[in-house]
Image (tube, rainbow, N blue to C red; front, top):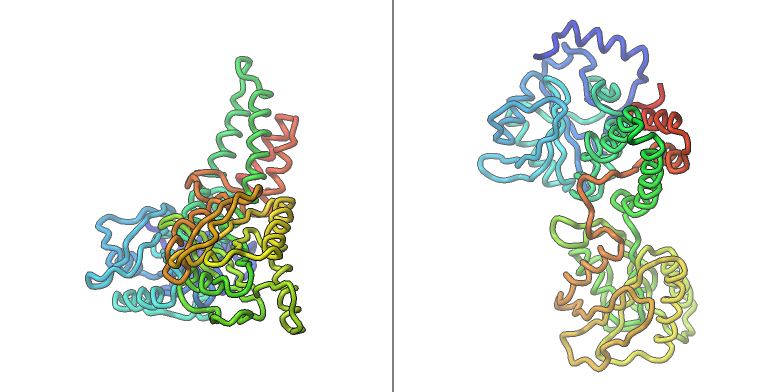
Length: 443
């Protein structure tokens, strides 16, 4: 049943006394709502995420014609349920524009989550305009839409999901975040709270308390890995000059970003660029860092500075790809440097992948077993051979090759603080209070 204007306006009046005004430049926390029902006599579409290219874009569609417009765009025959996530295919005159997610926030307000390419967003806005939903800049829509907190039937975690979504860097991270609203962390907290409340003599509180503490410790450990789904890890491409580092970086990025040349020392500084790597459906966004080649001796002060930068990037990396030219045996200095890097990366738990390049040419060095390497792979960066395997190993090195779409995920400082207490909690009453706070926030 649709909310009447009078009821909605009274709700808005109440929230205006308790909720500060919010600007629209990123996603609005909580559900979207009318500032005034009467303000939406005109239909609108707007982009809530920051301008520019991103992994995910979030659009709001609002007004009396919103339901019909979204139904036409998605080909949906049945009405969208409020606060339910729907995976959809967005089309315009038979042409598929994108696959995305639709969330109905209220009777006449929808969110559409799509891939963040500029062309995708513009094509969807153009299609919505043809359905009578003209695009309005976010700053002008700010007076019509505002964040009003989570729906009363949703957990505090659900509101945090909406705030975190613009930071998602891949379709996989979006799916995992959305799963936390009713499943994932929300379900974990709700189920454990219920167990504590229903504890009996046959299964005392202490049994559940030990289980909660153990699972909370694992959630804290796992959070360090899953954080890479929002904060892209740094992958440093390192090796001697003319090994093909820049060619490899360009192939992984998908377009020329680094300057390539047969002349050693072409890359005089490090270059970092975002890239999606990994198998289809399980890609991860990373920051690829193409570094200057390191030689044992040089009289060029600029090159000396560039090589110092390469060493610095190696220490900052989450994964190192060490590239060597397989058509020529590496000299002793390169082998020593490789072994030192393996030792250093092992001490700080940074996986290292030895990548033997130029496999499309006669090879005279096939690599050798070096303890501490995560993997050794043969590739041809120029021909694109072996890059699928390299990307798969890279995702595996980040421990993100197998991510359960429903697994609990701590993705905010508030959640981390509460779960940290649960990991050490020895009192059932205190644990129940923490679980309730995790679910419902601080009263």
